[in-house]
Length: 63
Length: 350
Image 1 (cartoon, rainbow over the protein chains, first blue to last red):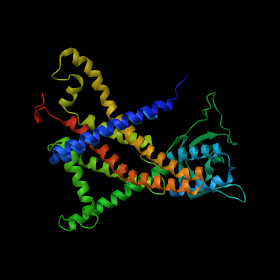
Image 2: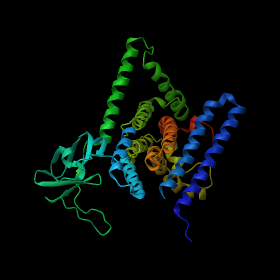
Image 3: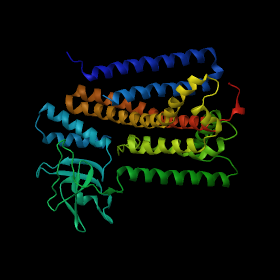
């Protein structure tokens, strides 16, 4: 039986979701430990999240 | 986007209640919305008496280069229904592109169903071009006015400046200086500020009921990424090129392996910028329009309220995404400029 391509799309979204989720979690923990570095952590968090998201979009557009 | 939804509803009434027909119509409507078009169409509906489709909007000039400039109004194209005679040539609109045809407007296809008619160079003032020009004029007037008001009021922000000053300072203090460094950041400030406000304003324009999808057009994000690519590589210093072709601090076999990867990275960086902005904005528009069209699929109070609630919350998120994507594009551009102008004395990592 052939697996439809949309299943792969779902898997990609799961992966990206977990990835961005853990980036957010890491950032929150870091801010909790060091509230002074909030600005820097936010910048790096957004960049990392954007990179993960980019991979997700690339995979979804390849469907 | 509200107006677009209206027109989808009107055209639906004329259809019979075939479910799959409605779905394919919504699909084609969304796809059509994502594309650029030759006229500024606000809404369309099917006239019940005559059964004809009526379009309400502004016609735009069509400018073609086909052995000389051909200019005519987009009303003549009539959404692909009529053939336009300009000089000795005939033109017809087919799926958003203008083709040269014979007097009857025949379009020939190859075996893969692609049109093989000659396609003249198209310099038309399309919907996207109008939006870009509009944004450019707004930005010029706004920031020129702000600069003048600073001069008049002795360098103190007044009125709109109170809103824009923190944003400009944010771009300088949080984006440019940390990523590029105190020594070189000034050269890139004008580009970074233009980039940030241009993308932000266009993203916000896409969320208005005009429903213009400019930053979700891959040609436009390509152009933006290309400018970043050119600036990065033209301002690349010795350290930048050394890190690409002969990575310091690693064994020689590793250097040979790393060189092609790093060289590929030069292209991949702007490529990912292009895809990210395009995909985010397009995806936002698709999701929003799909949620609105839920109303026409369910056709009861439950579907309508669900559609409204979801579309409303996604719209709020999209306003955030509009700013976030402008920010990400600017930060990553600044980061790449930072790599390019980095000098070995600036830090002691290796």
